[in-house]
Length: 253
Image (cartoon, rainbow, N blue to C red; front, top):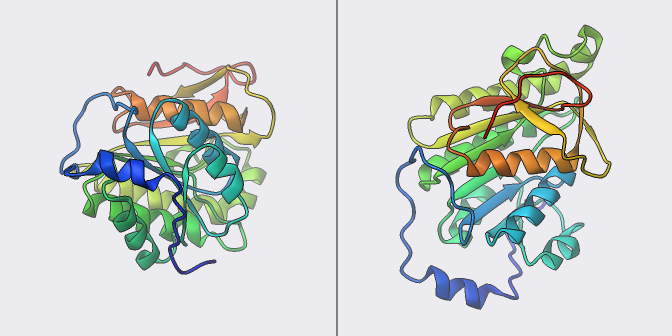
């Protein structure tokens, strides 16, 4: 993991002129989030984070993507997004990332670890949450997993036991986000099993904590962006599944 922040910004000059004199948001508002011209930090190096970044850029957002390495730098910068090198498990890295961004309107975190080392699922996300509160972020979207918290009964028991180390750490992050819900608007999205396939357009969000099923990463990204933009999702914990695989009452954003 890289301990230092290194932002390469070929288009930073234009961004600086837009941000001149800008005030950092100081309080969450229960209203729809306008993506256009907003500053958004996307944390995570996987497929969902990349798809989210792509969608947000297409909507006119200024997007920074937190990365531990430069492996995906070329792909991210080809979207005209900005790579910020840093480790979410190190608070000093997160603090420097926020300082570099000069005002953050929203944070979307898809950060996750492994069953062997799930530290990022809890501490990495909690560090981002604490920084978001400190810097007046308007909305925080946390992507965890079905099986976390009160959705423990969703996955089959043998699947839950395999993923238990990760799910318990994700629950810690969810709980911390709920605890600071009076300081920033949030939504938690819990996807089912992730598939690396083309988007289907049949992904849905649901408040049903008993569902469990697969969904493509691209469909999760679409739902995450919808959850960010909608005021109806504020303060909600929602599962994300493919409606053609699992029958669930869809939550309307």
